[in-house]
Length: 447
Image (cartoon, rainbow, N blue to C red; front, top):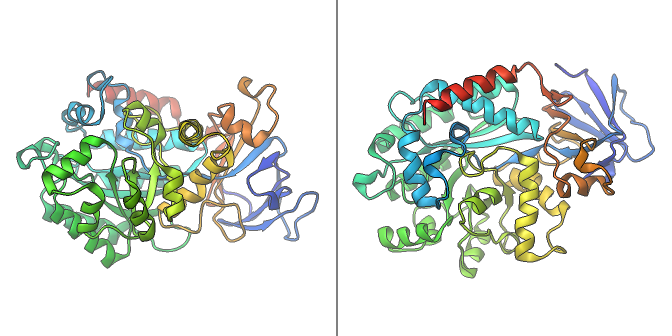
C-alpha cells in the first residue's frame, strides 16, 4: 500500500522526540515536519493518521543477524552448548543449506523483524557451500519483496579444519572466489545514496574461520569501494586463546594488524576487551553490535557498552542468529539489553531511553548511516508504532517505558521509506501462514 503524497501521523501517545509530540508529517520517503504538541502542521497534508493510541519510535535497526539460522532454532544437536562446541555441532547441518532454504529463511527473518518494529536489518551470511553461490542475490530479492531496508554482508570462510580453523572444508571457499564475488555484489547492489534500501558490506566471518590475508584483502576492497566492514570479534575467551595460539596476538591487535581498526568497521559482540583495547577501538571509531540474548544463551559474557561509548564507539543492538537467540524480535531484544546491562551498570545508568537509542541511532551509526535512526526533519520516514492494548500493559503508567519494561512484542504499524509495511499487526501482501508452513517443511530436512 503506497502512502498518499503527504501524511500527518497525528498526536502520538508518546514518542522519543518531544519536539514531535503533535506528530510528524511524511512526504514521499522522508519526514518533512515535526509538529509540536497542540499545534497543526504548516505543511499541507493529504491524509491524517490518528496515532493517539500509539507509542511512536524511529524504526528499530538490527545491527547483526544470521537470517538462515531461523531454520535451526532450538536444534537438538546444539542445545546447552557454548560457542565453539555449538558452532562445530551446527556447521555440518548448515552445510546442507539449499537456495530455497535461503529464500524462505530470509522471508521469515525479515517478517519477524518487521512485526517487531524493525525497519532496517543487517544480515551476516557467510555460508556458501556448492550450489549456494547466489545466496546474497536471493536475499536482495526477498528484501525488495517485503520492502525492508537491508545491509547485506558478503560473509566468508576460508580457513577450514584442514587449515586449523573450525568450519568443515565443504563450507569454505577460496579467497579468489570470495573477493571476486564480493566485488560483483558491491557493483550490482550497493547503493551509496541517502535513503538506500540495499547496501553491501564485506564480512569475513571470524578470526577462527578466515586467514589474515583475506582480512587484509577485504579491508583493501572495502576502502576501494567505500563500503563497511563487519566481523565477529571478542565474543568468548576461547576466541582470544585461538588468536593468541594462531596469530600470536589478542583479537584487537589482530584486527589492527590486518587493517581493520578504523571507522569503516563494526563488530558483533565485542565482549572481552581490556581497558587499553577499548580506548583504541573508540579512538578508531569502531562500532559494536551488542547481542544480549545470544550472549546470555551461549554464556559468552557481557559487552562493556558504557565504556565503549565513553571511548568513542557507536553501540547498536543486534538480535544475532535465530539459533543463538532463538528469535528475531527487535523490541524484545531492546528489553534484553536493558535487563542484562543493568546487571553490569545499575538501573540509573541503563534507562529505557538509553537502550532505545542503541537500537536506533546507535545501530544506524554502526552501519555508517546518518539518514535513519531518528525522528527528525530530513530523515527517512522509518517509523514503528505500538499499541498498549495487550494484557501485559494493563496498569502501565509511562507509555514509553512500558514498551520495554512490560515486554512489547509486536508493532501495530510499521512504515519503511514512507510506506506502511505493517498495518494492524499484519504485513501487507504476505501470506504468513503459507510462509510458516514452507519454513517448517524445509527445517525438517536439516534435522
